[in-house]
Amino acid sequence: MESLGPMQQKPARIRILDAAHELMLTIGLARATTKEIAKAAGCSEAALYKYFPSKEELFVNVLKERLPQLTPLLAGLAAEPGRGTLLENLTEIARRAALFYEQSFPIAASLYAETQLKRRHEESLRSMGSGPHMPIRGLDAYLRAEQDAGRVRAGADTYAAASLLLGACAQRAFAYDSTEEGKPPPVDEFALSIARTLLGGISVADELS
Amino acid sequence: MESLGPMQQKPARIRILDAAHELMLTIGLARATTKEIAKAAGCSEAALYKYFPSKEELFVNVLKERLPQLTPLLAGLAAEPGRGTLLENLTEIARRAALFYEQSFPIAASLYAETQLKRRHEESLRSMGSGPHMPIRGLDAYLRAEQDAGRVRAGADTYAAASLLLGACAQRAFAYDSTEEGKPPPVDEFALSIARTLLGGISVADELS
DNA sequence: CAGAGGTAAGTGAATACTCACCCACCCGAT
DNA sequence: ATCGGGTGGGTGAGTATTCACTTACCTCTG
Image 1 (cartoon, rainbow over the protein chains, first blue to last red):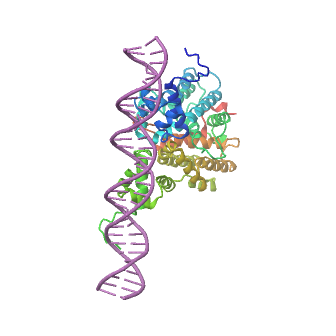
Image 2: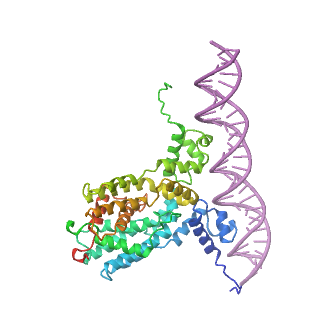
């Protein structure tokens, strides 16, 4: 029990993970060196190796512990179809998915620069029963449940619909570059507009087969 | 006039760009060192600097000269709405977009590891009047043209529709990891299914407002 | 004193980039 | 014909720097 005044010092391990996470987002994975991480965490380089056996292991842990999960929400909704309106549910899913991708995409994308690290991350995800295409499957499952409940058209391709909705959310995270004045649309109206459009389609009424 | 037999040697500059491109895709941007590039191009490291002032400039040129363009197709279609059926056109757009993202995504994504290089690339794109969100605008323009021609429902949100279609295509390039047995769906049937789903929507008929 | 938490000062390897030089070829003056 | 020299294309052998990681040591606290 320290009675230190400021006492803002979280445990070193946490500070290191935070610092690594922050640097990955700002200066990028390649420039996130041990020296920079140590400086940002307020400790020495050697301290990193007290908590993690290697830099790669440190990054794997950042990915494992810092990236939010999307699947729980989807699983929850699929468990009880018929709750709320379909539009409300899809909007909420889109909203959360957009926020999820906004956070995780820059980090996940930078793995393409280090194919070895990417493979290790994918392995780690798989062992947790997760993976980059699990959200699509989860949303697909929810839509089929709603289909069985009669709230989604019988002939609809639920997998395609899931790809469309989540794809739009993911794309929002990278289709807008940092400097452009045309920043991404606000998440709330974005979510509502794509959910509504996916539900209703865009073809003129009398062309519906 | 050389009468050399094999004479398969393309100009060195081309070989260097090809080698850099290839290495970015296979071992990743981070491991694509000057030594590796030189080896793959069949020349010395020093030769790289005869053609490019720096490694970063080399990469910028790979991005500029090797990544395919998507906008021309969209511009062409928007110029003459009413040609072909809407479903055919959207399917073709989705097909080409999916192939485009399949090629360009791994490289574009790895830029997130080098934020400085990323900014330079975005700048270069902007100066060419291009950019990551131009495809969405282009498709949006095409859809509005079809809307004016009465082939897209008057109230439809064309921008949301464009986000959905292209988002799904982009997501296909990264939502499926390399080792998974569940590889991405074949591009032709993928394109058709998302185009059809976007056109028709998924809600039951009598819920259409 | 034992041991956890932490560090200063390295180490060898790798990296981007440079420098002095080579060589084949062309061209005009001898 | 031949020489001298410029020139585009290319290289081998560096250099300074940076990187991930280690070692030997310190300093608290129980």
